[in-house]
Image (tube, rainbow, N blue to C red; front, side, top):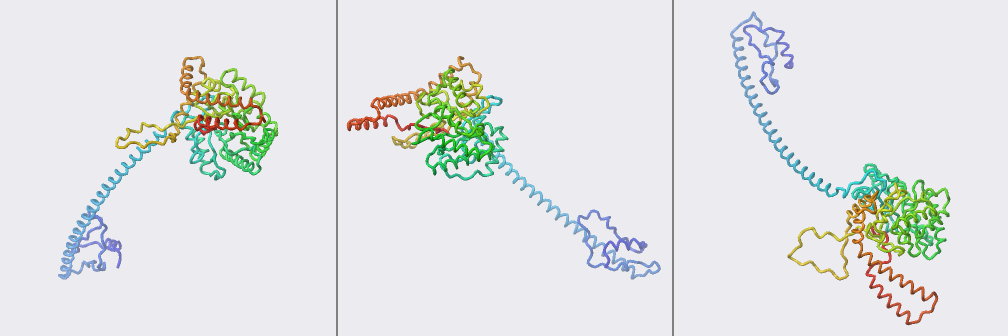
Length: 530
């Protein structure tokens, strides 16, 4: 059976006569909405060929039958077309319903997106920087910020307080075993420093672990300290950091010269094991057998290190520590005398960083007690000296001042249904970090650049901060006086004098009374703000 196309071709070849029915052309029924179906019974095209010489009633009947069948077929096709139109209309209705449902779902999605956007905006407002970073300054002030959750978090924490420099711990400073630096936080740190405009090689100053004592006499403990120290130096080089601050350590029971030899050997080995990082030794308060209270000790240390490594040895002046060790940083004359001694004994080229801390204890107390800027015995005048010293330009200046404060009580009206439980007498108020303290101190220090110390503005600031720290200063001054009196009595008795039983009993009672008067505060707080 030939296809429909072949039938049309055959019809075109044989012209119709007057007796033959006129066949419909396919393109005439353009109103049909679906393709024409092919008949299941298609007769041979030969029966439609009419011989003009033959004409009979049989042919006429056959022609009439064909017309009837054609009419029935047309009616059937019309009904089929109507059915198709109805089906198409129903499909359109279904499409419209689907579009309406989609629009509703889309509307819900838009509402959800708006809610999410609102929450995100709220979170962004909460994380807005406490102050914007000041651009174009000669002094790069920042703070020792948290690196909890990864070293990369320190970058945003520094930006949050408006710091142009920052310090951090590269790992936990309270334990020996730490996991290695992972690739993801390393890459994030490098990326964020670039995005936020921090030059990690110049203005990032990591702080070493408090556990490390490179002057340690015990061999096993010395190796443990050295391994941790070198691990930190390798982390610095992986993060593009060139400065690494650490405490020089303590001689403990050994002599200071022997301790310096051990420290110099450890530093020399660490420098040979690394390439670019600069270990920066911090000035200390001179308490006990700690190294670094006197500037002459750094001179003696440098003399024990090969000269090829001297360019990679730095010193960090901690204002609280050096003041507690006995140096005058308050008066302009004393401050300049301190820097001259630094230049003569060490060389100003070794000055690579500063720690900016006021002191709760008076000068020469040998106590490591950090206070907020302007509230301690250093006062605002000392920090005016620092912020206007040309030799301090371009080096990181890091705050380690205390920021822990009592939690805010303005979170809502107190409950009247039940009384709060009474706290035990010995319970202390739980403190929480207030990072706005650092933001304000950075702003204060930057404002001192170029300020006239004799101006009314400076005097008002100085008096306000001095009054704020009055109670704390008086408390620690009283403790310092008692200590001096005890030292004088001890020196007056003389060394090696045999003590009587009565003297021993009297001394024991005096110690107990003194312990009660000192509250719960230890001799040294250290860098507790870090």
